[in-house]
Amino acid sequence: MGDFSAIRNFISRFLTFTEEEWKAHEVLLVRKTIKKGEFLLKAGDVCNHVTFINKGYFRVYHLIGEQEFTANFAFDGNYVTDYASFVSRQPSVDNIVAMEDAEVLLLDYDSLQTAYERYPVWQKFGRMIAEYILIFIVERNRSLLFLTPEERYLKLMKDRPKVIASVPLKYIASYVGITPEALSRIRKRMSIKA
Image (tube, rainbow, N blue to C red):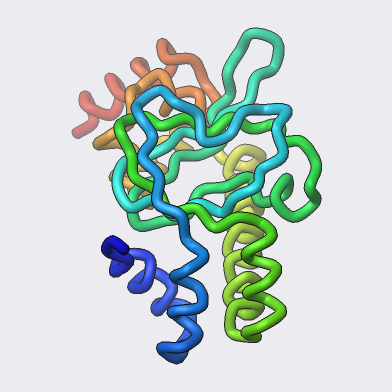
């Protein structure tokens, strides 16, 4: 059966559920291992899963021409998905790639709809996750619109130190919206100030 403690602990932060409600959710989860460099989702495919990361981390990015733009990073103990594609059933513009060997728990679209129908608690959880995603997107847009690249990098350092500690600089630069060379200059200025 496997260990579901990490996902159960995560969900418990958002809502209370009975043992019956948990078991109904747990049986829908499919465990999968994904090797470094393998895709959880490719642009053009419909996102069919909400994915909880037991181990490893993922980069979410999209291509414009030949250039990659990093939209997010997702680490163990959290979810990763293209929620817009998942909900709308439209093809994704995102690529979600494993940055290291990973183990995930997949919950497919049809199973989630069944859980929603049978147990109102899972509808509530779905709404809470959608609200969480919306807040993340709004904050990300505000950051890109109103902060300088240096301010975005400082905010990333403060809010998401795991990204700074784990992710190669070229992807951090892409996430902040600058070139790796510009990020190197920012980091050099910051080390001189320190």
